Amino acid sequence: MVPHSSVPGALVQLGQTAWWRLASWWRIVQLGSLILALAISPSSYTPAARSALLRQIYVGTAPILWGFTLACALASLVLIRIVVVTALSYGLSKYALEMVVRVLVLELIPLTAALFVALRSTLASAADISALRQGNEAGAHWLQGVLPLRDEFLPRALAGVFAVLTLAAVSCVVSLVLAYLVVYGFTFEGLSGYTRTVGHVFNPAMTLIFSLKTLFLSLAVAVIPLASGLDDSAARLSRSNVELHALVRLFVVVLVIEVVSLVGNYY
Image (cartoon, rainbow, N blue to C red; front, side, top):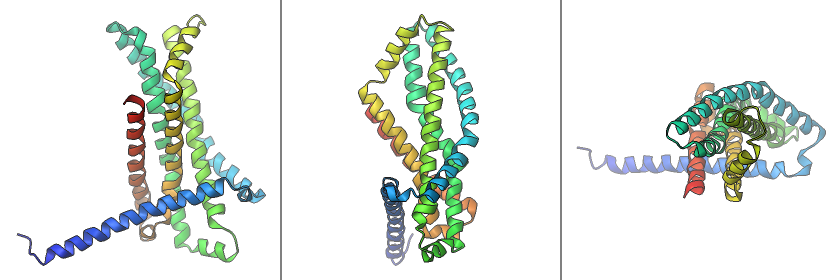
């Protein structure tokens, strides 16, 4: 039986933990707001800032673009074939293409692109930012009159957003082309029916939800690791633990975005 004297202490500790969690999420919101304000400010794009941004975009996108597109194409080909064959066996062939577009393009590809960019690129930024704080370099930048948010965080954040949007867009196009080839083959005879089916799926409401979902996933992947690297607790953690904390926070936000998008699409 728990002593009565330990109950207030447990409640205090629980309250402190909850307050720390809320403060961490509030810092993420603040950092996202600051990065958004900097991103739309013309003064942020000095020649040096543009050079750093282009470098971060290239490093964050080019090495993974073709590998991800190839892997996504192979996985899409297998999934499309399974759906088409299964639909044919049940006499539901007219629904096969629409199911492929809904499941693969609307749901799986944006999520996969976001997680891939996070694992290959932006989660490492959390550890880099944490190391930057521990090395006191951010303070040195402030003393030199250079804004760390503009010079260190903004290029990484915009590069993360660009990487997710690029991977998702290229993979969606490749998957749509593969879906057409699997269903109709190398002919233009099914083009009118195919475009009609795709247009039926991508109605204005679905298109808006798909665009917002992809945008919010890219923002989450870009901002949350950076904010986790700025967290006070990150200064006491190893590189792998910093990445793990950022991954857990990112997973929570991605899950919320997915649930909201599913509710918007199907309810």
